[in-house]
Length: 457
Image (cartoon, rainbow, N blue to C red):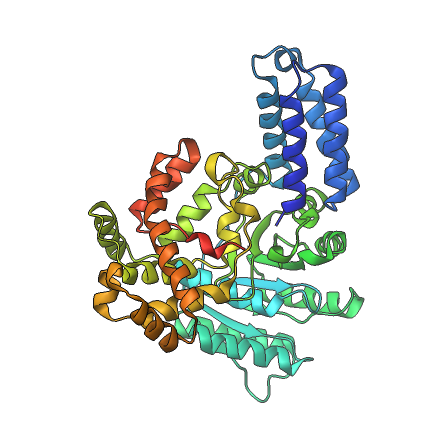
């Protein structure tokens, strides 16, 4: 996510730091490079033009050009303008004065509406709400079946409707009645989509809007379609009045132009982003955190929130004590690999690390998820005594472990080496300064010893 843009912007700032002092000429050259980087990232041309104009006005001021560290001030200006472009503050979902609060989920066919409905319902459940879902897509039985399967997997109620309810408005009325009777305080309405915007679709959505009086109309856009997603969002807003945007498939979009443009073009906030296929792969959108991540500053708050939401704190305290007492065993090593896996794709986690110090190359690390499975299998094939004392694992024991885990002796040797490296890694984390040291302390406190070097390829 944003990898290409991030690399190019950091190269511009590095060149600025190499200048003896900032002048109108080298600032102008830097701004041209930033403009090209934004356009290559598929940012809307008008948004890129306004962004550069705003940065130029502030960066060319006398107080910046004569500052002790002018390049750092330019980075701050770019960061502040990027936050403004992305929406300034996190846009939270609103709720109705009287339940149930109705959220209408709209968008084109194939954008990920149904999956996003399930993901958002799951997030609301974690926030102590009691959602109910309904699909009013009477044209595609597969869509209603998909939402029904998601509801069952998530253990969230869904309104299936009666045989007589064959129209979207009838299903919507029945679902609202059911939500009131069963005490659900949120009603998620998954609407029909089309391959393109047409009058029939808009008429149906406008009727649903009048019938349900939704607190939020959330437009789901596919980030992979770039400026087509921005154009569709703008059209839906003009004809329906959307209140927020969910951008899906952000994990597959290396450019990020839709995310950077959609707020400025539509005037409506980006509220959530989908970062993967699993049901827990949806996150609230934080403009300041995203801007800092693009500029190589990392996303420490999101990383720590993700850790705190996935790790049992009692287990973390026990692990912290083991680390302090130098009692970190192979069994603990395996458990930590499983814990880190709960955080989601490891490349996403590494991408949240700041681009500084000894961890500046982490975002380029490629992770082989199959290797993690092999490492866990190897440790599972050991006896409890071997997990507690790795030094007793002789050549004969290594051959037995390899056979039991379906691996080779060489892979067992690699695991033991990585285990030793992981024990050392906590010491190196605690010695880092700045953001890296902060992260090391947080991860240590939460019981995460870091990731073994062999995950990288």
